[in-house]
Length: 139
Image (cartoon, rainbow, N blue to C red; front, top):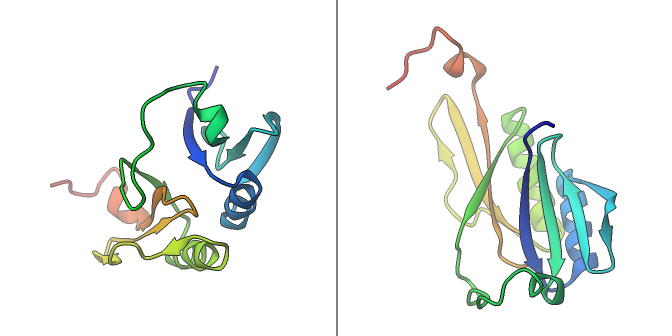
């Protein structure tokens, strides 16, 4: 079996969160979705599990972080600088927040961060393939 990652996220409005993630380019996997959760697929290896608060509570009783808090940020590689900009625009247009941190322009890498409607943080970045080729210097 291929190794995969499933990122579980508690959400306040499942339907709105599904719409948000679809707008970012995730696809819903109905096999692992129901009225309390949705499996949103980014790639063959990366999935976001959106869980209602009631469903989340079946996994843990730990308190939810206060509004505005950030416990983690997941980074997604994009195909181009334009794709980084496009996903930010989609986030802002569908109930999320674009540019929750200043954009970073490092020449070989470009990144911008967004938050979903529940404040879950995602970094999106593009890296010049030549910068990560086998012959590229690493520091």
